[in-house]
Length: 313
Image (cartoon, rainbow, N blue to C red; front, side, top):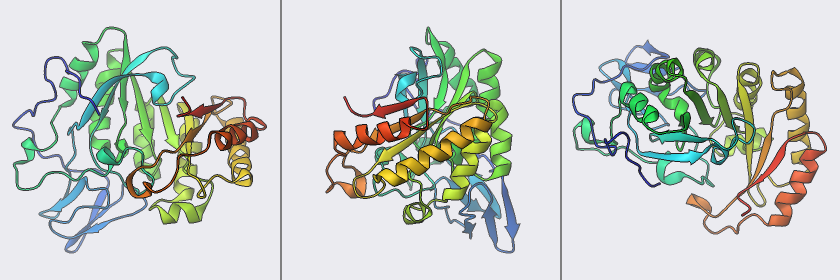
């Protein structure tokens, strides 16, 4: 991911950053239990959660990736992808590191599966950008719509979002999340009032598929349903050959989204049916055939008003 200057900072480390205590955890004897996502990681001293971003130290859970920006770019909003939210706009996209799923097909694994450097002071690990500096960067870019928290799983760094989003919105900037939807109800409820739009991955319409890749199908469905009542939501399904490319599965997925849409503020949730390319632990697979993508798009269009083919150009 190419880096861009952020108001002259060029993403260099900013020193004297305070350690950030995490939200949403509880103490239980010698362990702390993270209550941010369904994994509920039980961590002893020095251990890091499955997401690689939250660490136990001294009986406290710390959000180690707080403000740690690994990548930034000024992107077209359509790349998030959001087709029906201020189309034609550009948005400052920023990402940290870590993810609370382990998808073997991850298209962005060099960021989402990044491990923080060890053996160095905290403030020399992925570059630190306080919320105030993020605001300065976003405001410095003419025509910028706002900030999209993306590239890795943004909600594992919810503390940063909860502090940055009010500043951004106070200055008329939009807040966008590109997320896998793996978050519990309480933290989601705290974040949603600060969010203008979301693209949520619905990786398959199968609990078995989600278990295989470290996720919770029911949690993600609940996130989509809840979020669609609060902000603009679009959904992305990456089509992996022989994994989630069945016509019956797409029909079920689109049918469910149609039901959710009928109860949502947007009335119709757009669906992005996206082409897989060999990455991460699935480098031996071939890209999704274009005819598969277009066939599944046509099936989804039988239930949904807005269906888009992604990664086809």
